[in-house]
Image (cartoon, rainbow, N blue to C red):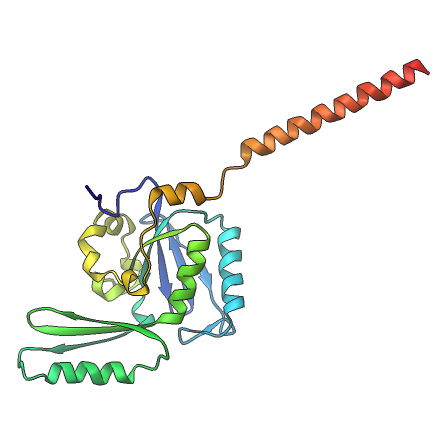
Length: 230
């Protein structure tokens, strides 16, 4: 039996992506760790310099000791395009309006999806290049992305409304809003994470330290032994 993708022993956190920043939330009520991205790195959600973007992310994570874990990406309303139309008429006008909207989105590479309910259609478009690079970086850091949600679909209007514990606990309830599959990425199994996560080197460092001390003692014993013979 396949378990829900929320079942994991790894710590789950949230990355909140805003127009010029990325914030790391570990727990509800806890102050986030914020990375501010300058205009020389990103502008209007278009990456100006991939190298500087990766360097900024790496320095931020290393400096704040953000290591391998599971994360949920929540996208601020400022970083994607959204348009909703009523679809009651049934004359195709809603589809034409959605098509016109998507055609006007100022993105060279984008991911789009149209969500349909009984009374309306909602189109969402977001830039592909930015999230492709971000997801690739996180994968190389052994950070497994569980989901990617536009904030409006979770009824989140601002970071202050982000309830980390609630979202993590009810993650399966929001699966239909998850855009991660649009990026052709899949949830990495626990066995892969276990094999590829950076190993804890604390014990190795202790052993190397003890070995170094023993070598010093051995050299000292040999040295003083030679002196006594002389």
